Image 1 (cartoon, rainbow, N blue to C red):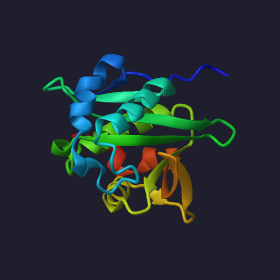
Image 2 (image 1 turned 90 degrees about the vertical axis):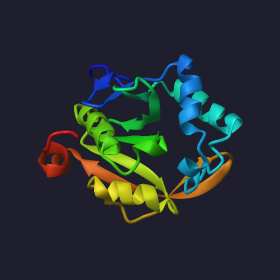
Image 3 (image 1 turned 45 degrees about the vertical axis):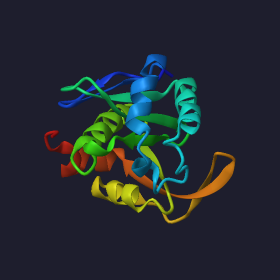
Image 4 (image 1 turned 60 degrees about the horizontal axis):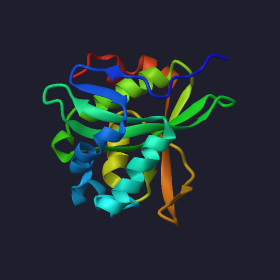
Length: 186
């Protein structure tokens, strides 16, 4: 089986999704240090430096994490990563995603997801997204981009505590046939 690149550089009209680097720390923390970004997240204190530092270091260690760079300004505006690739059932997760607030509500999330999904569907048939059970903002965003909610709750350990999550999926077939994904970016 050929090697799978879990940290490609993906270039969209307005965003570059590139491998996270240790030198991204100051800009990434600046983008993430807004309490409103994390208010509905199970790790609601992730805007603090020690908690975000652990998140950032874990992202680097994962060897599957990204920095999002606004092509116009050159600034880091968020992050995400691939996780839990399971070739036996042809699945991977996209998660640990955040965007700076000025990029909410528009099409930046759609562009980033289009890039990451397009890459993932070169080697899997299903992409999963775990969203905190009370994070209605991210749940709405997932539904807006065509995520289908699985019925059962799943639990994930975050900061030493087990938190309930809802799981959404997007299949390769839906990605290839949905006007959400096949229309031009932007």
